[in-house]
Structure formats: C-alpha cells, structure tokens
Amino acid sequence: MVSDTIPYGHLLFAHGHAAEAERLTALAAAFDPDTIHRLENLGIQPDWNCLEIGAGVGTIAGWLATQCPSGRVVATDLDTSLISDEGCPPNLQIIEHDATVDDFPEGTFNLIHSRFVFEHLEERDAVLAKAVRWLAPGGWLLLEDTGPFPFDSSPNELYRRVSKAVLSIATKRMGSDYEWSRAFPSQLRANGLVHTGVHASSHGVGATPMGRAWRLTAEHIAADLNTDFGITATELAAFADQIESPSFDDLCIASIAAWGQKPPVAGLPSQRSSG
Ligand SMILES: C[S@@+](CC[C@H](N)C(=O)[O-])C[C@H]1O[C@@H](n2cnc3c(N)ncnc32)[C@H](O)[C@@H]1O
Image 1 (cartoon, rainbow, N blue to C red):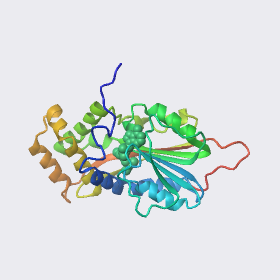
Image 2 (cartoon, rainbow, N blue to C red):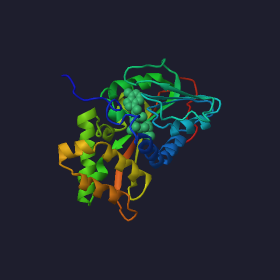
Image 3 (cartoon, protein in one colour):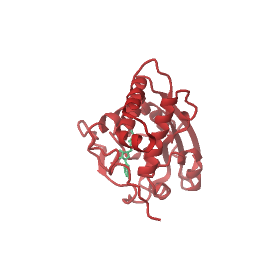
Image 4 (spheres, protein in one colour):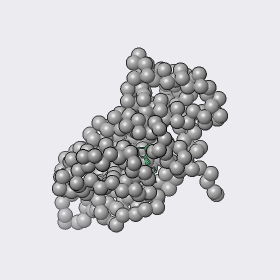
C-alpha cells in the first residue's frame, strides 16, 4: 500500500514556519521539568555518551551536556536550524540526521532520549529497533510520546472538539500515531530492554506554556481544521482566547514516558546508580 502521508517537518511543522520556534520553545518549557526528572531518575553519569533524537530547539540536549561534562551529547534533527549554537558546550555536537534512514554505529550511546518524535514516524517500530542497537550494553533508552486521553474527558465542548481534530489531522496528514505510547513500555521489552517502566504527566492550558504550544499547534493547521472538521475562524479564535485565559482550567496532551535498559554484559556493573 502506498501511503499518501507526508512526514513530519516536510510540509506541516517545518522549522522554517514563522511560529515554529515559539511553538517548540513553549512545548519545551512545559515538558522539560518532567523530562529532566525522568532522566535524573536513570542515574545519569558525568562520562555518559548521550543521543537526543529530534532535538527541536535543543533544550534537553543542552541540559544533558551540562550533566555529562566528561562524556558527549549528540543532538539530531531533520533540521537543526532552531538549535542555538551560541554558548554551545564543547561536548555537544549538533547534526542533521533523519532517524528513519540514517544510522549510528552499534553500541555508541549510554543514554538515548527522544520526546514527541517516534509518534510521528511511520517507521517507528524499525527506528526503535535501530535505537536499541545504538545503545551500549547497560545503556538506557527514555522515550516520551503523546497520550491523547485527557481530551476525551474534557468538559469544554469547543476545547475537546478542536483538540481531538488537531490529533486527527496530524494522523491523516503525517501518519502520526498517538496511540502507540498507550502500550508503553511493552515495545521496549519486545526489543530486549530490561528494568522497564512507564509514567505519564499532563499540564494545564490556561495562560501557560502548554496552552501557548497547543494554540500555535492548532493555528498551524487552521485550514485543515476548517476543511475537515468545519471549525471556523471564529471558533478557532474562541479556542485561542480560552487557552490564553488564566481562568480556563483544562488539561492538554499527556506525555507518556517509557524507559528501559539494554542488558549489561555479564560480569560488568550496571550503569544505574540511582532511581
Ligand atoms: C514535536 S517536535 C519535538 C521537539 C523536541 N523533541 C521536544 O520535545 O521539545 C518533533 C521534532 O522531531 C523532529 N523530527 C521529525 N522527524 C524526524 C526524523 N525522522 N529524524 C529526526 N528528527 C525528526 C522534528 O524536526 C522536530 O524537531
């Protein structure tokens, strides 16, 4: 079957779009504290070699570089133009790399992290298998992807309708799969990882970074929302007003995190020092 989807970043959500830097910066502001907490729980060590797949604006890659001063961090993206190299630490390498086609040598990294990327890759299962090969024995993988379930129970009809339409359009146009993470961490165990775990978090949208990121996401695909779901410009403006209002209480997408460790070589100590 020939897919008629166009991969993430090739048309929709290209980094050259005027609002993309602001959208990804807001997304990072919302979720970086959760991600950092999860990475700290893995017992990150100063000499680890780390890989950040689909780094976006690069905030987590930059944080990893501060945690691993005697190791190195490789930050990849299809388009690295939104990662500032101003003040870039010497142990941070930023490279253009398409996870669906490009490779790394087997056993290169002690830690691989990726957030809100695999859900957009139609080849996500094959890329996961590759990422596990890139891990050194004892290395950790932390994947974070969208959980759409907070929208189903939203009491606000407009917010619920627009939000669910946004996800449907991403699935139709880019092949995104927001249910892939619902089975976490079984995908990691199926790839041979051990000490697996799962955790979910979600943030409020009323005048918050999460709200800004979600408003910009909906506005990016305003034409599709209108064509496919009949959501008018007036309704989208009302949706945006709600989200920017400090008195609007609702939850946005969840981040579902799964982690797991590549079995250490027999006789060598595990890399985990805490968590
Ligand atoms: C929703 S953004 C998330 C950015 C960042 N990880 C975060 O959570 O703040 C998805 C990112 O994945 C990148 N991306 C999409 N497909 C990719 C691929 N095949 N290989 C590498 N990066 C990819 C996009 O360019 C974009 O920066």
